[in-house]
Length: 244
Image (tube, rainbow, N blue to C red; front, side, top):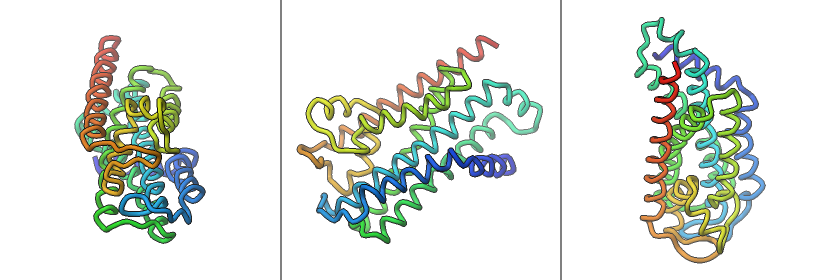
C-alpha cells in the first residue's frame, strides 16, 4: 500500500497542469487579491480572510481531482488489475485518501506560509484552527469527486467535477463577498459551509458585506452535503456493479 501511495503521489505531482490549478492558481489569486490588504476583518485582516479562502479552494481542487481520478481508474478497469495484486480494496481506498490529503496539504502550507510572510494577521488560534479546518474539511470534496465521476462515468467526468468546483466557489462566497439574493442562494451550496467554517475562527461568522452566520449554519451545510455526496457515491458504486 505504501509503495502504491508513493508512486501515485509521484504521478500526481508530475501532472503540471493539475498542480497549477491546485497550487499555482490559488496562490496567484491570493497575491492579487490579498497581498497588502490590511483592513480589519474580525480578529485579523483582509489578507488573512483571502488567504483562508484561497487555501480552501486549492485544497478542495486537490481532493476532488485525486478522488475523481480514483473513480475513473475503477470505471476504466484499473480496479480489475489491482485485484490481481495482494492489495485489498480497503488498502486502495486508504492509499488514495492518503494521497488526496497529502496533495491537499500543499496549497494550504504554501498559501499560509506566503500569507504569514506578507502581512496576513490573526491570532495564533485563528491560524491553527483555520489551517486544520481547511485541510480536514477538504475531505468532503473527495466524496464529491468520487460521486460526480461515478455518476457521469465518462472520460470527461473529472473535468466536469473540477469545473463545477469553480462555479461553486463563486456561489459559495469564496472568491468575492456576496449579498442579497446571491448570498441567500450561496448559503445552500457545498463550498459555502466549508469556507465559512474555515473562516469562522477569524470572523466569528460576521460577513464582509453585512450580517452574521451563526455557527450552526456552516456546520449544517457541511453535514447535509456530506450526506448528499455520500448517497450519490453509493448510488454510483451500485450502478457500476449492476452493469458489470
